[in-house]
Image (cartoon, rainbow, N blue to C red; front, side, top):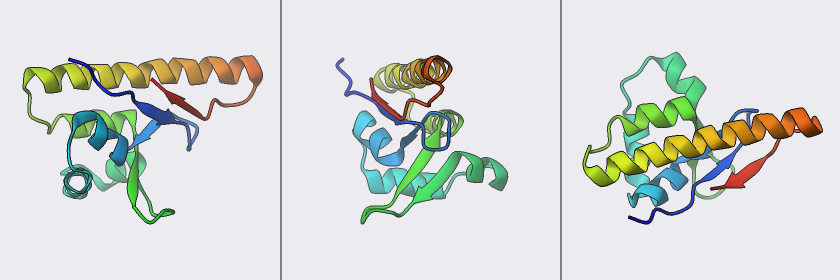
Length: 116
């Protein structure tokens, strides 16, 4: 199974991705991902800290932290492809986190974006 690349950034000084990237990665409709996020059953503090609605463009997206993505993935169907995809997406977050931390230490600036 070939999975698309994962685009990560560090907008709030920590690794994050977007609802659009998650939709593309898992081959799901972005509108359904947005609706799923809006209907999450989690404490408001958790949702506010890990899912930030970005309406800067014509197409609103959620900026999602690693913890938010993992919480979101728990609701995805657990077939073999979804399991592999979830694990690879989490690995991409971990890779970016390490890369971002190393770049910040080495250059005293934060790496802003990476595609894995």
